[in-house]
Image 1 (cartoon, rainbow, N blue to C red):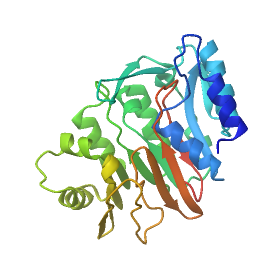
Image 2 (tube, rainbow, N blue to C red; image 1 turned 180 degrees about the horizontal axis):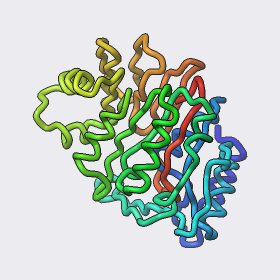
Image 3 (cartoon, rainbow, N blue to C red; image 1 turned 90 degrees about the vertical axis):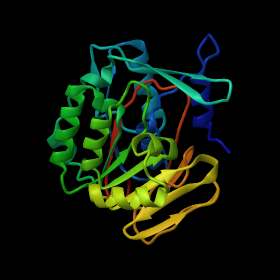
Length: 277
């Protein structure tokens, strides 16, 4: 059952034209779900000095996140328009430059949060300034583990960039289509997982497969779930997301989840404290 806040958020998310609007992006969704499960989350981003930015800040707080690390800049608040093709697959139009391309957080302030995990994706890193900021934040909190959620979008990545980010990660999540695009030579998912974990020195890697579940390698332990209601179970904590559209992660203090949504007002990355990813 949806909460009163969820229902109000949905009403606030429908524009005059009938299109659905909501703050989102994989990192934001992940942060929201982590916070709902009681974990401490720092969400690092930027929004514009515009009406959309004000609305995004209000909705961030409505969803239970602190906006203390969300800056306001002169650039317009970022948006992604999502259309669905005849087969029902989402097609993304990412509007850039956007406010998040100009974020400038204080790395020491983020490090003072003493995170156990740092979460980052690909899209933001296409901007040279934002990539440098991400690197500074990661280095400032170097004891923290690093979770790279690949999430490739058209015209928003290069193979060289993905390779660089994979080298920075301790754990990686990508879907089967992304695996095939980045590493087409592998005959099986297990071989990709094992070779990549060895190459990049990952602790874990998860390949999501939509309705067919996921494949998960943690250390030397490999498992596959057979459908999207199954969960890959391993002794490693935290484990990786086990579903594409509603990912579940086991962490020190319990399950953690995140989901994809259809309208993105801004895209950024969360940094989390002990017990959260």
